[in-house]
Image (cartoon, rainbow over all chains, first blue to last red; front, side, top):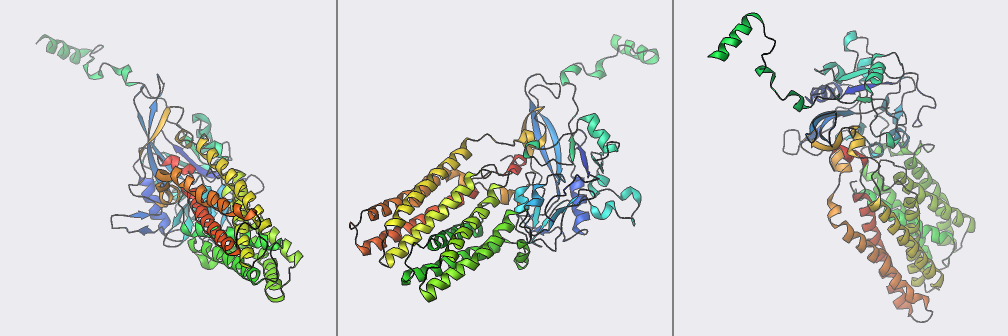
Length: 253
Length: 308
């Protein structure tokens, strides 16, 4: 069971995350924790939840990075840093190293849609899969002693008892800026595939040979601040009618 | 990587145990000697203690038997299977020595082979992880095998000396294996210290096309499972010192203790035993230090997301 599917899965369900749009509000973190603590498998426990050393299990975390361009770059101002919020959850890799290291068969990649899951009744909590994952997508739940990871909200996406609009992962449904998208990345005509093709969606750490399914859309180029040296509010050229008269009168006073 | 005490104790104890079992399997000890009978018992005890200690870090140890099922893909599973399979020839060989004072060549040699394969599987658990670049090299299994062999022959030397036997063969074997083990270990460490990181914050975020990537804010203020399991840093401060100490205790002292034994008649039997004890204990402390550094110094790719 811990061998990877021998053929490419017919569907490759995954996320496309838009780094240009994410504002780092952590709504997806909260919504993920809320849904998954009561959903598939053991609850996502917290340790010392009201104490000074609070920690807990999360399947999705947001990092923030400061990226400083070197020289005259098209993105951002030369020398001026750009802040990029970076949501990170399981990438449901095609060559998932976390699956093949599992000694018990608890960790597996589904042959039909490519979702990487943990069968918690079989997991012994050895932690080797978390070591094998270069992305830090797996976290051991210290209360249940089993490995937790993003399930792509498998209990939502195929759930016919909830409205169709809700049949997407919780993080996607909740994102207030629409930075997270869910779909089939094996289908070149799907909205997510088109987005990846148009925006140059990228793999994280391609050198690790994991072939992630999830893609990240790079931040769009930004106009340098220097291009707007004169604040727009002080430029009245082109004003006509009443406003032109007021402008003219006020200039004379 | 976090140096879990249970894993360090496991790899060190089982390494020594399998090393001793391999030496016993080669028939280098007099099967009629009481010391050899005790040696068989000690080898099995070290291996068992090591394997039991390895289950201590599991979240659900009651399901540990499930780890025997995935030997086709997982090195951890292979290790478990090989450990159990190897017990069969080791127990038969121990029975022959303890109850019949006989050396059983087939069981012995199969035990030696099984011990080597088991240690190799243990080391491949680490060497197979691309996410920990320092471990991902054939030097890792080579070092584990040589350390097990060196520790085993030092222990064998101690038991031969205790039984009043001829220590020449095991003295030579010990010196050769110690020198080889520490030579390769030094290569291993130089490789780790000089390697260009495979993954960087730039490749981890894909943002290298804009410029230099620096962590601005972690996901949460406190540590989480990932930072405490994969982000251990305490060792770094004294790493160079500890590495030198491990070579001194694990290599230089044992070699210095064993070399006089090569000169036949130069050392009294009592002093031989004493030197063997010094060599074994010093080597064990040296290897424990080496094993601790093996984990504590290794950097995991996920730390690219945590600014470490």
